[in-house]
Length: 541
Image (cartoon, rainbow, N blue to C red; front, side, top):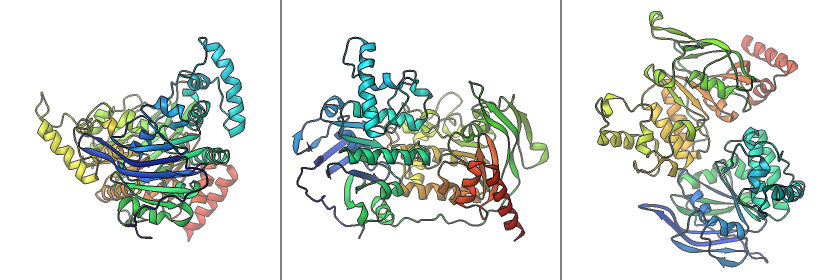
């Protein structure tokens, strides 16, 4: 089908659709987030909403949930037109939403988080007693077991998401909206989530998923709607489309499946780490004698299931935390005399590292990459605000800051192109593009990147990959940490596999394949033996 085809309405059934939205319009000042949107969602189905970052997906679902009010248009639930002025009214109508960034109070237990705002007694203890029985029944019905009495901040992120889903079901939601539900999940956690969603659907729950991951759309949804630049451009039955067609519909042009790459022109070592070890606040070893080198003109990928030390390694190399268990790091200059070795005790902080040519794209973009209450142009210079080109010793020059921000916007297609907009009002993907643009604009000697395309659409992924390759070819030494194995295989010249805080294997791009990396992730002795034998044969051949 052509990417220019007009939207097709969902087929009528004997029962009224779960949701019908007609002529929805929403703007924020001069920016139109939704223009004349029509959407029909069948009852007891899984419906995907896809589009580029900033296409208006989350805004449309926020209108359905009552977080925003549409400037125009109508909404019908189960065949009855309704007015949804706030989320309380949405919940009363059976609409629940699990946000991309969970709305949980970490010190409280899972049970207390589920109850928060829905207590049915003046006594919290009485409410908890009543709720526990009800939640156990819901958990058994939908296969959503969670430890109700554990502090939610101590639970794995996949379990935290289950708490959010239980919170919606406890409030009797029969329409469930999930915004980027797998953005922070491991592949295993994502698979578990999909099983839960299928069970929910089979028991009559209608599910809407906002996501950028086309593979997931093809795997889990019944129908999919595509948005582009605030408009709805297509509706498809999932079985009658393809990931390639959906990508073209999202972006408005064909999207390259592979990133063009030349063989790496590997130069001298830029960073050398030896025997890095780290224990967390509970005394648990997260890094165990990890050593690695980053060379100019090379991309090193770190593969592994989330929680196996990759995050701690990235934080240590970027100066955010100290390797409190020991180790040394050498920042290597162009000559031996310009190289500096640091122990774990005196390693530079992030500000000092930036001056030494170390760029950093953190895994947590909202917590570390930018400040959500800052404007886009303030986030665009975060960490680099004392550069002489931006002002004097005493103050910034607004015109220069704005000009730099506009350059970054153009280079990375950041949307909306409004330097004054608050960072919190940008989509997650556009936040990511701004952070990467900011770090690459300084042409770092070493670039540390955590989860480069988390929550980013296919068009932006293509752009980010090209820019990473461009930086490599210009001589930057690059470290990429990603839970997306396909991403590691696409980008890396050399791959290090981590398991339980250790590097369990090292492979060149030619040696690497999903099975080999998977065995190293498992870190089983027999598997390592098989992998070593295979690698040895490949090297001899």
